[in-house]
Image (cartoon, rainbow, N blue to C red; front, side, top):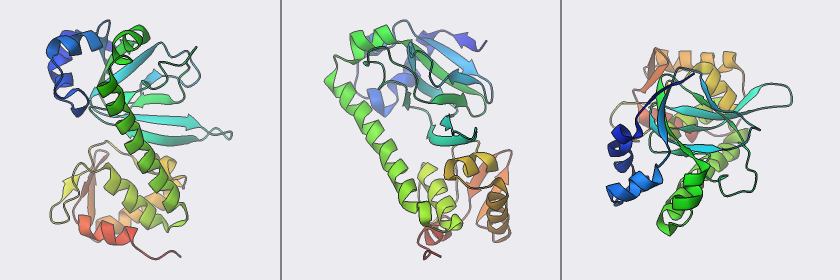
Length: 235
């Protein structure tokens, strides 16, 4: 079972997220009523695809991957959720909702798990909050569409686009760390390619001084060169 702690201690964290910017503490307390903060270990599942969606969550710390299994049993990663992101909220208003994806922790992570009843009572009646959730979804869909557009691009271009999309900053002049504990396999599953091909590219980039890796952390040393990889002509 995942560890839990009081949601009261996490209200300050939730208030700091753009999703709830400008909301009074009392309102945020109502929006989180019945919720609890759960701590997940690496690879621990929070929600299972196909199960009744009785709760949704706000990512507090760490990261989570949203994925589905293909007909062949391979994992396809659809989205990486980071702090401030909302998971499974959009299915809450549906009659008899089910989780559309598997949600699994990437490294030690924390999520505030909130019952569906709270969403129907407090979230659904707040137009500003619904608009902000729709904005999060729109941003997520935009990244997904960009990935589709890059489908026929060379592997190096697809990998560079993925890493740049995950960066909190895209300053071409300074190195920056990808804010997720990302493995080669997760990169491969996200792009639909083999792990071996991802390893080869990452090894080449490391030798060229473009990236460095340690404990599943990827630091982009030369973001400008990754941008050039994205713009590489198709093969």
